[in-house]
Length: 130
Image 1 (cartoon, rainbow, N blue to C red):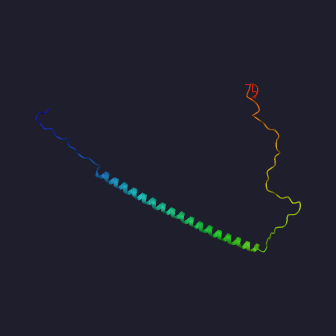
Image 2 (cartoon, rainbow, N blue to C red):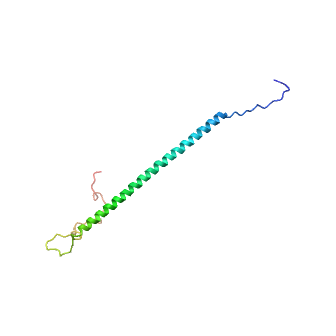
């Protein structure tokens, strides 16, 4: 212990990355940005090719559909020489026909159960062997 000396604050020195580290990080960032730009350009090119192919296929399908429609309309025009007519005639005697459903008439039953005639006493109820 030194008596009489004044306490001194510690010396703080900031030691950050060196200039070489900063240069390498900047170069890596530039390389990354270039790779991302290349990937985006490739993706856009592939996507546009897919869109162009789908558009061409759609146009081909439309042309095929129009050709089939034209062929069917020509075939229908050729078949128009055969005409079909229908007419309603009277129902011949003995023909089987259908009719509306009707409910069956049920006969009246004669069995009536009266619950008012018996008194509740031993032996007058249901005989259960419980």
